[in-house]
Image 1: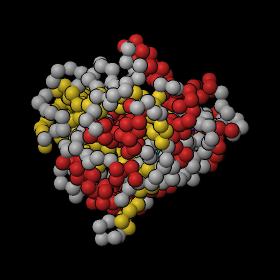
Image 2 (image 1 turned 135 degrees about the vertical axis):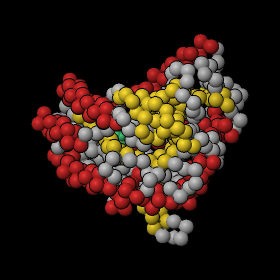
Image 3 (image 1 turned 90 degrees about the vertical axis):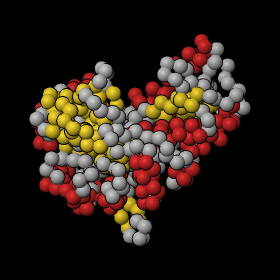
Image 4 (image 1 turned 60 degrees about the horizontal axis):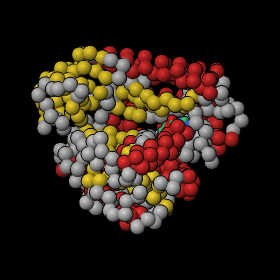
Amino acid sequence: MKPTTSPKTYRVKSFGCQMNVYDGERMAEMLGEQGITPAPEGEEADLVVLNTCHIREKAAEKVYSDIGRLTKAGREAGKEPLIAVAGCVAQAEGEEIMKRSPAVSMVVGPQAYHRLPEMLDKAVKGERATDTDMPAIAKFAALPERRRTNPASFLTVQEGCDKFCTYCVVPYTRGAEISRPYSDLVTEAKKLVDAGAKEITLLGQNVSAWSGEDEKGHGVGLAGLIRDLAKVEGLARIRYTTSHPADMDDDLIAAHGEIDKLMPFLHLPVQAGSDRVLKAMNRSHTAESYLRLLERFRAARPDLALSGDFIVGFPGETDAEFEETLALVDEVKYAQAFSFKYSPRPGTPAATMEGQVAKEVMDERLQRLQAALNRDQLAFNEASVGKTCEVLVERKGKHAGQWLGKSPWLQSVWFEGDAQIGDLVQAELVEAGPKSLAGKLRETVAA
Ligand code: SAM
Ligand code: SF4
């Protein structure tokens, strides 16, 4: 039976990108303001928000299996939870979800989740509601103030995308590019720092396209925003993601050489190494222009760690074209990267292109690409051994007395000793693994 009284506990489950993590935190804050508390670990929640991702087919399918599992568990327990589907699947398949899953009471798109409390009131009365409006910016103004956070926090500064890469659903699910106002961002960053944040990652689907006006009315880009946020006392580290090569300007490159708080890390997706494929993807850069851009970043910040995104098996990609991706990887030597098999997304131009690549071919290409990327990640980590660097402690490790944090180059570092979450410690990196490093505590810089 569905509950007919207001839920007492909630669980927000976020899939996909960091922007969803941010949205998930904001929804949790909103539910907290309604007096609903997080469900204790291991207990079923009265309200479950599935904050979904639509970027690849596998990610989108997860939502339906989750709904099935929740409904079954609820029936067995004699109390079904209220289910809200949020995020990009909600935006893209709102009506379809309502038809396919009667157990879902609320469907709310990524630009409308500030209306979740109103929808919840209706859901308790047994009404089902869908809200996939895309009002620019309204959402942020309607959300409660930031009161809780993690030492490493996210701050969404920009949403949506106008790039229309031919494989990507983001321009359809998140809408056109919008930048949040400068003053709102400075205020939110200060609140996050007051709540304990030491590091802030500025988020956007296309974060380098952020633009705004500072308090003097001067136009500023992302670099200007970073410069001003670097003045916030108590904020030790700034990062940003995800950027598009077409929007990386001279000021942002210079910022990497000038602002100590801007961490030496750049996530800059390239997707493929073949110019023909890049053109078919509508990426507006070539392999060569991407490599030259990286050279300029590395000149500004020689210890910059690089990260990227890759898609293998884009329609029409030949073996020789895939080899060009491997050649680019060999040249860049990424510190870490994300790589995916092409997934046709309904409504995107690439989904109906000729030359869809067979699954086995994609599997083999992905394996080869990931072997190369893993090799380079391990080499990068091994080259860090012997360095003493600052680590921001983010959580406890698996064993008693063990801590986990991040180096300036976004490597996971674990160490043992006297520390607490939120500390900035100096650690010597003593042993490298493929995905993390072991450190030895030197001294605590700030609590
Ligand atoms: N805005 C970023 C950019 O410029 O690349 C990233 C956005 S997207 C959330 C993250 C990554 O998912 C992309 O960089 C791409 O590698 C991957 N991706 C997007 N659409 C995909 C698709 N249809 N199939 C496989 N991977 C995809
Ligand atoms: Fe998608 Fe990124 Fe391309 Fe925008 S720039 S369409 S978000 S892959």
